[in-house]
Length: 277
Ligand code: ATR
Image (cartoon, rainbow, N blue to C red; front, side, top):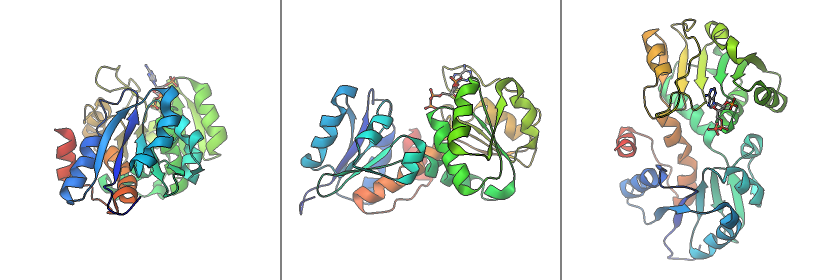
């Protein structure tokens, strides 16, 4: 970026009005007193490439990408981080001085940081994890859990073939369990993760039987509206450590902000309050 130009960044989605990223990054820009702007950009899929190629020329230093552009952004990028490649999608783009687009995916990082801060006593080697769901969010969670060295991951999804495909991609630590059997493996889990949309406001509830939850287990839900899902409520009553999903959204934003604006921002209660308001 040329000397003296105010750095610009934003989130590209379609639609994008629901995105909390402008509030989040806006809060950090203000708290650190930085010159910079972060805006929502509603871009139709057909226009993504031309927009991405134009943004660096307009002073943009990078962007987040969200639904439905995460896979396309990965394909369009000039270079790609290993974790984005593994997940098969990008959520954070950094524009180099020459306009080249670097694609990263910080969702797995955000998931793991949220877990580490919400359940500091949990370590990846503690024992098996159970993961519900086999969509895009599950890919980021699996990348993080496999990389962290969780010894066994029991993956269960309504559509079994999607889980089988993830086992093929993410390796032998994954055991696929039929959706109707999900309740039976929970008692072996040190960590339980919901990556499905079940339990989200306006969606159906997660109906997996939860009586097997062990009091020492850590339970986390990627759903953050409501903050305390039925899964987390039940887990709390069973004596588990529960970690809500909002922190993942906050933590995944850290590496992008640092690359674009040059300050590694803190995830704290002020940020949570700003995003919830
Ligand atoms: P995301 O990128 O958020 O993961 P996705 O790729 O659409 O979104 O995946 C949604 C996940 O929620 C999937 O695991 C999906 O199960 P299927 O693969 O069987 O579709 C799961 N899901 C959504 N609605 C569900 C329902 N009513 N019952 C069970 N699982 C459901």
